[in-house]
Image (cartoon, rainbow, N blue to C red; front, side, top):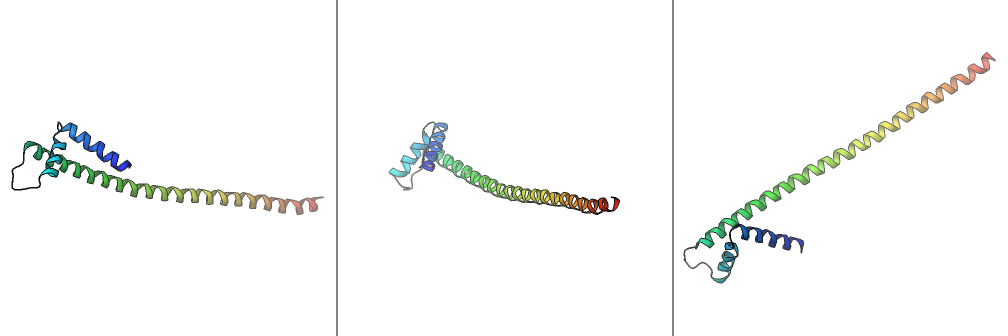
Length: 115
């Protein structure tokens, strides 16, 4: 539904750009298939507009594919960085706990020897 509405909107914009000749071109194609007749000004402009529409569609598709690939790479890198950050926090906490336990274990026997 959305794609159809977007397609009609794009066709309307192109038709407006070409002073209504794009719809005339499509009507000409639907009314009479090629019978060796020469194209009118509307027909030629219609083919030009159709070519521009196809080329721009290919460009939009290529840009979206590039965006999707880069977004996937960014998401993977962000997830990896988050995992590395969590691992670094865990290791820092383990180091802090080890120092605390060692200090306690060394202090307790020394206190009894001193006393």
